[in-house]
Image (cartoon, rainbow, N blue to C red; front, side, top):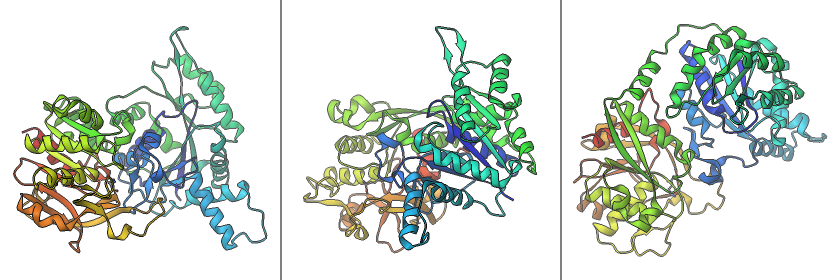
Length: 530
Ligand code: GLN
């Protein structure tokens, strides 16, 4: 029977529920258990695909093409689980499904209500991950206890625990234990209140993970244990681990959290192997060499907007025993102050994905700099599209070349709308999404990186390289090294007269892990080190 762990949050958001869920998943996997993870988000959007990165951070794309919360990226990076459309539900998607059922007549004769219909739907979504091969499902409840929109989720997980039996379900509450410098004291009251609210909702947490700036003395743990009614061994202290998130599992393991979970849920484990993880941490802490990569984007001030890119760069570093320092460059600043002021001295330049015209000209300038100065370059999605614009304008001499996304009347539309997108008007979930096969041409940097001809990568775009310009690009030294199987879509292009200049229409950052750096990030970092 599949066991369930529910992770809730208290006091404030952004405490790292996703990272803690992922870390717990990793620790259980290291004991030979099969784990799946999912996240419930309390907002009303059906998925985060329509939200701006400022609003929501990165949109993570699964193999099956779901646009999801960035925490799923943490799940995939920390564990071997492959997430899918059942790994992320929102209030919007739950209501959408219930309303569709109502319209079909599935509740004929009944009044459809939050309780039981919405809560039952949530329970069905939890059960979707149950299967005989899965030992543990970890479900993270977004937001914090006490939020109005959190309530149906708490009621659903309470009912779930009641039906499944307490030996099959575990509740973990992640909370903030602040230190007040004026009083020189650690304060437990916010956590007591938050656990109090959880208990009002009928949920007694089994474990409390305390985010804290200071060490929690035995007296603080005793207080929390007594007033929150939680075993003292199950009060876990978690201090900040910046800059490496991959240390979180070690903090949990040192305090016996994995043992406690295994005991409580009566899980049968098989082995204990965290040695690979420890060797990753060793490289992160004591690398042989260092490189500096410029990330030229337009949501640079928000770490979470490019979460998977930052992590993949770290992985590329791990693959080369190197530390990767990232210089974050706002592409609009390049437009204002010039490219040299921002990019001089970097060892590699990466232009990531994005939407809309703001900052595009700065990205184009950054790419020209990378091409002309022979600085290793990786262009991802919009990054590849900007590289096509740059090459068309500055090498092929096509004045005013652009993508029709930014200029519908451009005389040279080197990037244009995908054929399949022409009649689409709805914005939600309608891009070219998810895993698509790609065939690589031998004797290219792409082939050298992957070491094989058939690959599959995840996509999220509406625009595409315009094949009318292929011959001209090739004549000027651009190679098309990866195609869709029908050869209609350019998936990878690379500039030959350059040490390493590779552009991809897909998102390699969604498939990189610390234990398995993505080949393109690994090669990109390698090129930046030579
Ligand atoms: N805006 C571009 C498109 O839709 C690029 C998308 C992206 O970078 N993910 O094709």
